[in-house]
Image: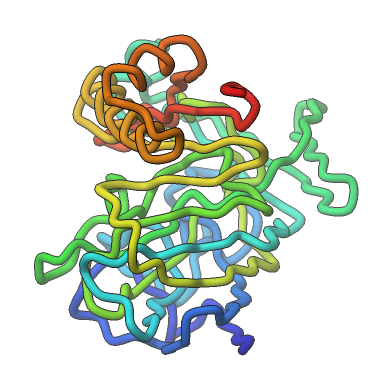
Length: 308
């Protein structure tokens, strides 16, 4: 079955919450096509002036985080199961924005740009997958969604900013079309939401924003896995497995990612944990996912052809 969701008063929200009723209930195997706003709830391209004063859609409210579309309930999803999200298609709109320096953060202070707001506006061409800013720089586009996830089990409204083991603001640039994200289900029905389109981003997302853009078309296919419980996000990307670690520090996030990767290797290759650790030191790459969302992210990557 195929479904469609638009970003409107019935679907937009600025928090994760297990208390929000689903706007759509689907069966495992169903596909949903979305359109999403940019992270700032923008009503259109940035037109100059203070970025905080840009025009926003009517549904925006003070205190909201990313503009999310959903939530979607998947029949049969319950804590202890794993949600599979296959990313079939991600098509950006024709414009995007990158912002640095407006917020007083440890990173902006370290770079020496705190309080010196710099905005790059981008013209995006989904046909050629290229973007061009107002300074004349061109970049290749590799669009993905920064936020893919479910609410924590605790009642109430939860910020969209920190990523969690059940997903959310992961900001992993490898989650492009053709990849599949696996997440541990935290609440009955899963209550999955999506948003925060990125046309392009480097590992780390060092200034706190990528090319933030609306998405004209996002197609996701959902499924449930009963016999593969997870403790955190795992992804299947082009020719590799990723395990995503989260923590208050990069050391903690790295340990989280590697613990999950070592577990994956013991199961996939029938290894002892000690053997998996030794082989991981030879064939697993550790990369910084993002450093700017309060909770930082690291991912470990194991290529399919690394062990033969």
